[in-house]
Image (tube, rainbow, N blue to C red; front, side, top):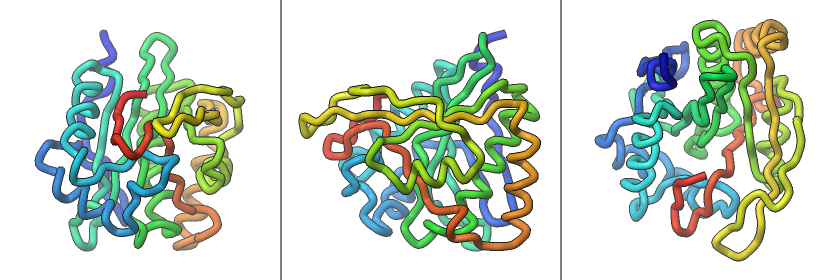
Length: 222
């Protein structure tokens, strides 16, 4: 058994959104979704624009082929439009750990139930189908909205990687690491279901776009 078999391509469907495998033909739809809010301008996130969307997809698919990642586009069930992206990444079959990252949503869908449902679908698959022992989240120290929203999911902060990466502007990124363990999943699951059943919860499902690469060059490697 290898990591590629562990992360098998699939579709995850919820009431509001569906997570479909990322394909090369999603390029224009991704740029359109990111244009809602010009998300690539956020210096601490990595969101594709028209100049780098092809390299963004190429890297995601190469990681998928290597068995380390499973990238998705986020589809609005009502309109069937692409409204964002997310993925499993840094999969570790030996230790049964995986990260959820590279997450972003069009501005119009931030602070709605979209993020909560996406995370519920991904976490449920990770813990109940992949038998993961821990799911990790990482974000930039300065992305306070992301840090708050990750914590509200029920994730606990594991620590901070100081001077973790060098940015294209010459600064160094401190990366905040969070995780949810398999023992914690039951409580997190019930809390997410409770919140989703209550409808849109702005304070709970606040968008958290994760920081993985400098935006200006649309660098895609970790």
